[in-house]
Length: 227
Image 1 (cartoon, rainbow, N blue to C red):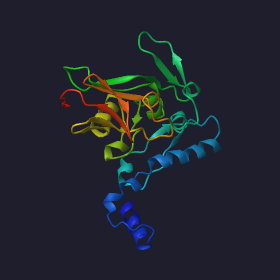
Image 2: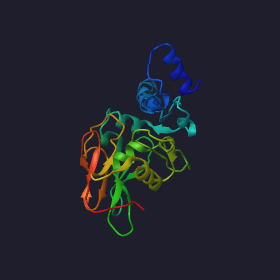
Image 3: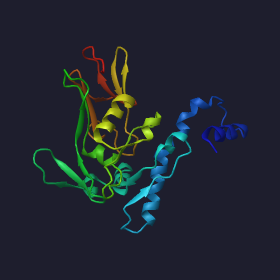
Image 4: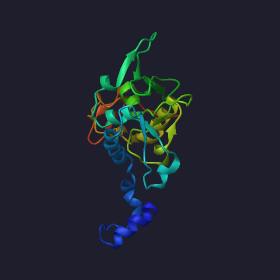
């Protein structure tokens, strides 16, 4: 049964009254609640079980692929574990790096320049990458998932590179507001929604991301157009 047919069925039963089914897109975004449901399954599994495949949501968009999200990513996103409980620092030259204690995924801060002529950028820190990482298996390429609200089909994809995830943030979750600057969506998890705790950031025109009402904001500075 498709999501639309389910909504129509609920409408007939007068469970919902809004007939504009396209406007009920939030009801199709079940991935986050399904993630939290998986935490209960984790508790019932043997300790040596490393990962859980997320069940498919009813939304057709979620059928693009099925992510095997690492148990530590789920536990950290749900605020059930602290960072040091699910990742440990590893010795590297230069950039600080961490390793997931469950699947050994290497996690570092990564960034993407928004313009070749400026220092404008979007970045995701270790805590953000920890929430986004898929279970690392053998020779399989590292995988990452969207940690923001699912607003497009692209949000359901598995990204095979850190740069691909950053490009997704730029295209889907960084929005220009005329005359005001930029808005950046909150992460879709149970952790604290603050600039210092969210695990990512944006710098545009020398202005860093700040906390706003219902989202993060980057105040307007100079005229800036994303390439």
